[in-house]
Length: 211
Picture 1 (cartoon, one colour):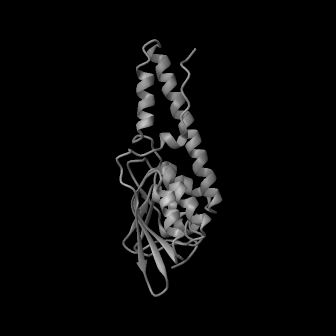
Picture 2 (cartoon, rainbow, N blue to C red):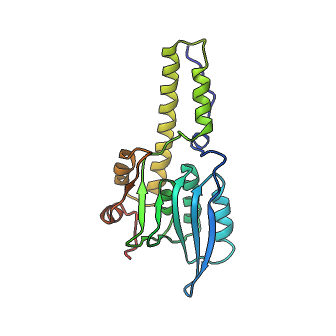
Picture 3 (cartoon, helix red, strand yellow):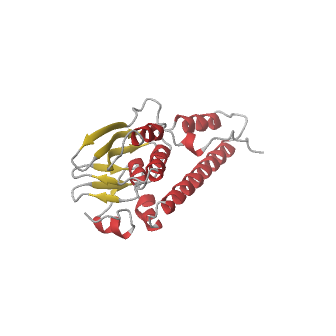
């Protein structure tokens, strides 16, 4: 019999390194209202900080500028934004990619300025200490043959990938985005970025406000 793997949640496998800096949360006062600006890297726990910022005063819109980070944190922030019924925007000259893309989808109204960029790619657990630790545990199980250890790694990868994909799919559908967005998302390796064209943004209902 193969070694029984200790259960690990998808969230723990998708955590970014603990040394990562939390998301920067700023405010910009305008004549139309207050803008909440989210920038930097998404890490676990950011959603609660964003919720605190959103409930402190009325927010006109949330602007995002981030290369990504922890995918689960991006989903959590997106769910928080949707619960608060706020608008999201990528301003001109700004970029929102990877985990930031999922946070952006949380907006009830979503817009990207002409020179703003929105990017997607395949998720990865390569930076997860929990995932690397589990692989190390399997590789160190010398009581099993090399073939059995390889099978365990395949099983771990399949389980993590299936659960993470299901999590993403449920979220994207809930946010009202077409599942066709999976084509560029899953076709683009984690070390690369597919920048959505204006046509793709509209076609997939990623943006629902024409600027």
